[in-house]
Structures are given as structure tokens and as C-alpha cells.
Image 1 (cartoon, helix red, strand yellow):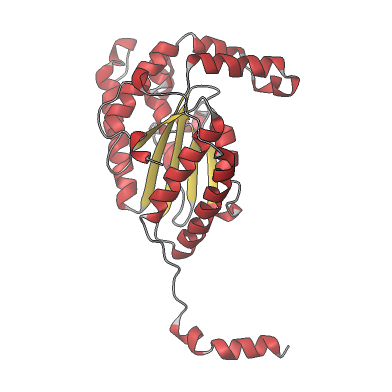
Image 2 (cartoon, rainbow, N blue to C red; image 1 turned 30 degrees about the vertical axis):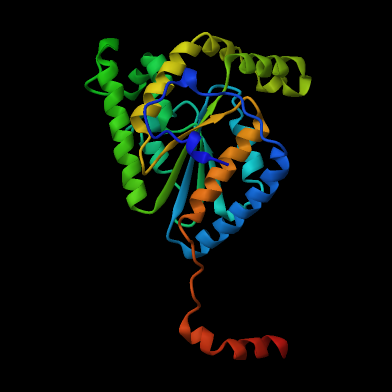
Length: 284
């Protein structure tokens, strides 16, 4: 699989990026891939030198939840932490916009998955700038203050935030699940047509759908300004869920391989007595 075609290494236009791709036997291949990721993560956990932050963004129904379930299902529970960021709480609004994400970061040895991420602060709030008023920022007095400069400054702070994490041993991979508007329509209808899926539907989904073009513009700008060599974006065609899951899993696997995680050696004193310890257990 050529992963370079999904990686953002130069300015892109989302309208020119495919939303559909189908890989043969994607589900079967995913089973093997996620097992390999889980094995590498166990070694990463034992080594305790690196952590990994997997960021998932995408329009409603792009498949973030099911991707998390299918890609990470073979992980040891102690090795992965998933955080789904909703509307900021009263406490979170009393801190800077990155605070709630910082305190959710994975410890060394663990994989953290952000289902929606710190990028919501330059996506949703850019489409709905009135949300920023809840942050009570001294310099923001009116909607006029929430201009391109305001959001570009936030993006630069996000770049600095991610660089700080990488320097301290966090592997960052960011995935935009690129869904077509037609496929979103099909998935929303499915939620309405299948009783077991009704609970997933919200009238707000239709309101946000009307702002599709604005969201695409905001995503494109954010991706172009924040895809770096240390924290790259990958644009994943998301109309076919099995294929999207496999591409994400393969990207994680190939990235983890680059780090050559190693299990720590036993303490010399324990090694010297290992036969003695075996004997004690065998003679119980």
C-alpha cells in the first residue's frame, strides 16, 4: 500500500481528493494488521519511552466510532485510551482552548485516541464563531475579532503544542476521514430507516449538513496549515468503511515500525538468580 498518496506533504484541495477507494479483502487484511499493531504497542508499553496520539476528524457519519472499535479491538485494555470531545464544560471553558486536550494526553507507553480533537477549536468554532464567546477571552469583544488572523494564530499554537509533544516522545498521527456529501446522506437515511440506529440521529446533523461547504473550506485551511513533518495529516477516503479502517491501521503499523521499540532488559541481579527463581516455583 502506497501510504504517501494519503499523506499531506504539500498544499491540497479537498475537492481533488478521493472520497472513495475499495481495497479487496480489506476486513481480512485488517485483522492481521491490527494484531501486529497490538503486538508493537505491547513492546512500546514495556519500553515506556514513547506514547502515541491518534487524532480522528471528519464530518458527521464519517465512521470515527466504528473505526476506533475495529482498529483497536485487539489492544490490551491497559494500552489504549479513547477520548471523545464534546461541547466544552463550564470548567473547560475557564481554561485555554488546549487545556482539556492536554490533560487527556496518553502517558508514555500508551496509545491515546482523540475522537474529535483540539482541531474542533479551529473548525466548529470557525463555522460558529459565536461559540468562542463562551471562552471569555479578554481580546474578543465582538464577532469582528474572530477573523482569519484569530484562527490562524490558534493553528500556529496547535503546531507549537504538537511539536512540544513530539519532542517529549509522543508519536502523532492525524487522520481526516474524507466523506462525500452523497455518502453522508445515505448514512443519515440509514440511521432514520433502521430502528436500531435511530438513537444516533440528531436534527442538528441536518443543520450542520447545510454548512457542508463552509466546513470543507475550514478543514482544507486547517490541514494545509498544520500538516507538519512531525505531526502529519493523512486524508483517508471514507466512503468505504472497511478500506478506510485498513488504511488508517496500516499507517499506524508502518509508523510504529520506524521506532524500533524494544523491551527493557531484566535487572542484572534478577538475571543472575533467574534459575533460582524457577527452582523455587517448581518446588512449591
